[in-house]
Image 1 (cartoon, rainbow, N blue to C red):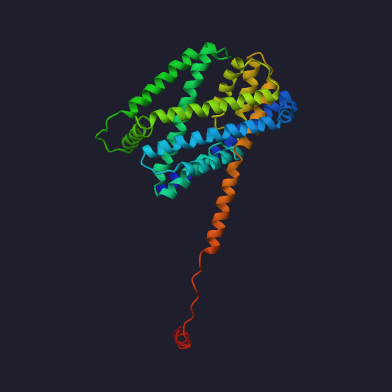
Image 2 (image 1 turned 30 degrees about the vertical axis):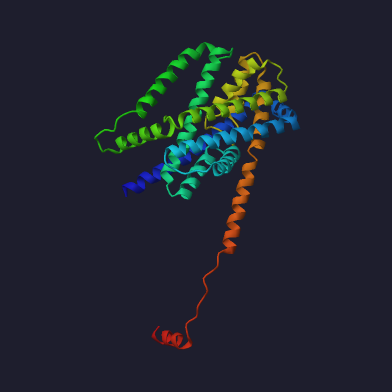
Length: 340
């Protein structure tokens, strides 16, 4: 009875959080529409051209392969087999789901569960995806801190305090990774030991660590390059050294899980960052709109992966022979009828 109550509360909490994420992203978009009107959104759509689409697609291939390689390295560190070709296809599918569905994480959940069922170890596969995304976020934040300290931005005066907080958090993660297993058998202690072992083998090992950092840096550079392409397509003429810090701030805002298919925090952060940097908030929203469209186009191959998977299931279902229906002899049927 207690387990059922706990499970019911957990399900209700997840449902509430899902609604909070959707309503949060929709609320940000509604606020921007109220303050700025539909003009920035329409201007962003009009600014998209063929060259921007091609550039975003090409950069998307590079960043997706880098993400898949990072995931493969982490999975290998945890002892889970993951071919690079499979990882690339799954990552494209994951990105497409993240871009088209609310929350921005459903694709990662699907990727983890699918891989776990394929290898027969859902728990380890889920932990590999969590660590892979965690590693990407850590490298992105580190690059953002360095660039925001070096280049002029609206938050440059606050970056020393932010860097100090992040250093403390990073030190705590390192200490957790190298902590010695304790003697207690509590559930919390076991979880801490598992997390420490995963960090050591999945992220901080000499075999995987450099590759994970390199792949994450390529991903951040690709996302930033996509933002600069979108800014130019939206009509921004400021120097790249002025636009790059704004792009990093917007990329950090995109990690906030209050969105509707990726829309919401990105547009709000763009409006604030561009306005605080002396550029217009409308230009910021237009840039974010272009980025959203180009991101969707760059992840479009994921839709093809979903369709191919669906068609493969249909073919397997049709080719699977159905067991024949055997009828009992007449005498047996009559005897069963009598005794029945």
